[in-house]
Image (cartoon, rainbow, N blue to C red; front, side):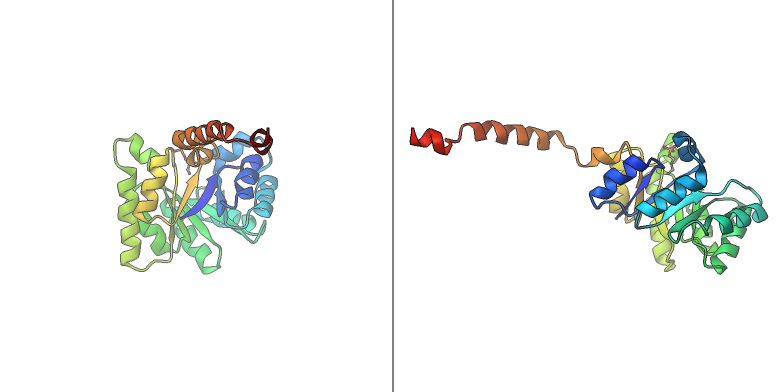
Length: 220
Ligand code: G3P
């Protein structure tokens, strides 16, 4: 499973990148707003750090606006991917952009039908939002399982980015379901390597090490 960070925070990105765990980054207007920096400058900096796709979202809602923004965003870096919302205009824009070889990530996917249509329109990535599906009392992981099986059934190259990941359980279950990618908040990812039994084990080993006779003590 590829790990993306769902953040525009350069410190978080560098921290995970140093571990060799980072395969890409996703952003959206809310994430960009949190950093209080210029959009283009932020995306260009992230693209220069990350060796993988970096999603930057359009703001326009009409086909023409989305296509124009996408063509501009695409010039910012070789690894930039244009994020497009799942609407009728979005599907048309994705279709146009895919014919131009511009990579797209269709976002705000909440059903198998939406994911299937985005793939048919030519999306490089689709982003189903597991946490927000859970929020309305449905099962976000079931959506990942069903969408993944659907894309397999029809041999699509489109990759699933599991988005709105809120818990370690979301990540693990999406991996078991076969999602290609999880995009993980910067605050959640460090929790993946923590386990209380690991910490207890280290403490126990250090305590026991104190009981091992050291060379100087053995000689005296
Ligand atoms: O990846 C999408 C994400 O940024 C939305 O997450 O937790 O606001 O539903 P959340």
